[in-house]
Amino acid sequence: MSRDAVKNLLAGVATSLDQLALVDAGGPNVARVFPVVAELFRAIATVVGTHGVEAVQKAIRDLAKTPAKRANLENAEAAVASALADRRRSRGTCDRVAPVQLPTVHSNGTSPDVLFDQVIDAADAVRHAIDAVDAAGPNGRDYYLQGGSAFRVAAEEHASRIHRLASVLQELEQSAEYLADYV
Amino acid sequence: MHVRPQFSPPAALMPILVGIGVALASALSSGCGASALQTHARIAVMLHGANDAAVRAIETGCEHRAVAAARDPDVSYDEASANAQRVLARCQRVVDAQHAFSAAYEVYVAQLLAVVDDDNHQPSAFTRLRALLAGLAPLYADLARVAADLGIHLPTVPFAPVGAP
Image (cartoon, rainbow over all chains, first blue to last red; front, side):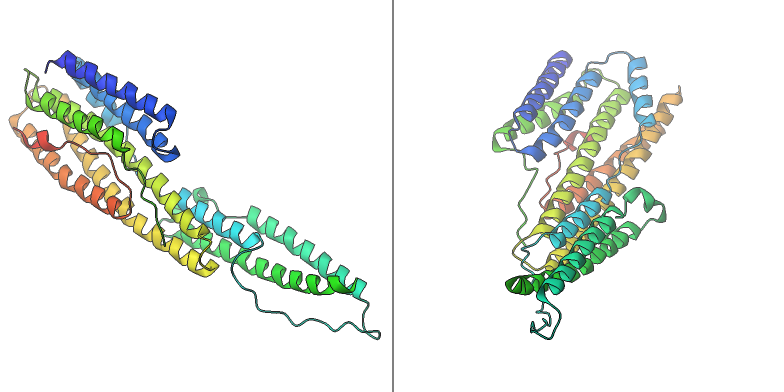
């Protein structure tokens, strides 16, 4: 196979892969990968088509200037922490909350309206607290200098804080549902 | 925990990808008057792109799997959290293998640059280049294996012509 034929073949393949990515032939994740593969084969086609020694030397110097990428899991860890926090915030998870001790509503006790309002106000405050704590979640850029699992630990601790607050919220919501029958 | 395989090329693409490997093997092993330096330049470019594609596949695939485990509605919060951490721990093995490959690749490119900067092109320099290249193939194979264990399929790199003199 001649040099030009190989070059044309590879460039054609690169274009085909671009088009496949455009139509998203293999789903959204495949679409993210194929443009990279297309770029790879386009680069190979360029070098295959190179005749001059100087051009080859330039290609090598360009490669040497570009550090090889290193994979990291910071985005994945942050996404997991966020997914776990969302899960705790949302109602209707399959986690069961232990029943709380509910008050007895009677004529000599606190009025049910007051009890209900107190619980609703407390629940609103905890919801705001969850939002505030969530906004203070860790970011990988603030931990990577420590290396190791520093960011993962911080993300787990963050998810745990949300988890505990969400547990308080669910207890208050149990009380509110009970008291709602009296108001 | 159910993890859906990803990044397998669609069946319709496989003939194309196999064809690419064959075309590269022909181009690199046929000689065609190409200098050894040019052959190494082609391989280096190919490996650089393969490394980039691998990084993207690993990061995206791991994120998808770990988040899917964290959101699994069929298990409790604690179980989902533990499953997600297990996925991340397995991903870390893939990341470690990728770092090993990219570090070895950089040594190879550094040696290639040394050959370019040395006008005399000592034969021993090419011997060292071939040795470095031969060491890259098993590292990529190891990376592809641990990634495949997690259901992440990396681009096939036609290393066959690398062993050719």
